[in-house]
Image 1 (cartoon, rainbow, N blue to C red):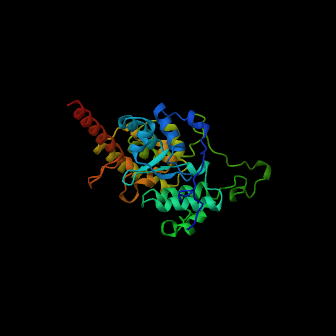
Image 2 (image 1 turned 180 degrees about the horizontal axis):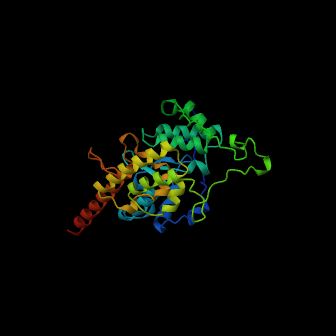
Image 3 (image 1 turned 90 degrees about the vertical axis):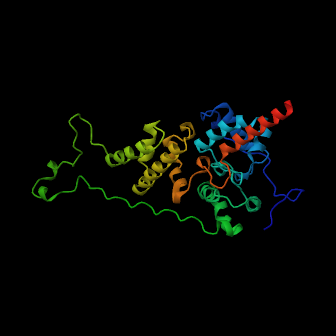
Length: 313
């Protein structure tokens, strides 16, 4: 697979990256905003937004100690701004393709070359889903450019079957002998307090199950609004995932500020991250002796302390 290259033979990269001005009003802490800008515009960034970034590189580039990097990174993970594969040290900017995607065949081939250089990562399915959503021409080319990784595009969900609605002006058998001018539309009956019956009673009941299971109880109203946009099957899966997530958070004593708000979790379909027994990267407690993103910093701090102690001898 050939692609445009620079003088060193590396695939050509963008010389600039687009950044939405909303980053200044998103509500990030100062360090989280600085880290987000670094990830969006830093020397390792690629157009497609999926690239290798050892966390020590980021700390060195920003001039930060590893301890300072920990909190803003977890803030970006909890917000859904990024995902991070700590096993392979790969970062994924979830909405990168929404603002800047490979725009021509040469750029698409160059992006495919970069993707081929990455190790196999759990982030590829989420990346392909983002490409299908935000960069359809690029997504259509990926199975051709990298068939071993993107050979089968995801099957889109079937369109919802419209529910037939009763026409209130259709004559019923009881109206057969009544003149048209006295037939009234069958309007909703008001409750005793003058309000109309709730349209989302079933949604409210299932939302209560979800909200009680979800480990972080904040911003209920926007979460309930997001819930009403889910199908019955999605609600059932979200409830089951919320229960698994809550048990994991409790059993591993994970701070709740690292858990996304329920509305964010629903909007970004985070219940899918818990499918098939999976645990998202920033919640993982690995059994193979490896470390999650948070544990990497703990090791770095310990190393720094030992180095300072050695220098003082």
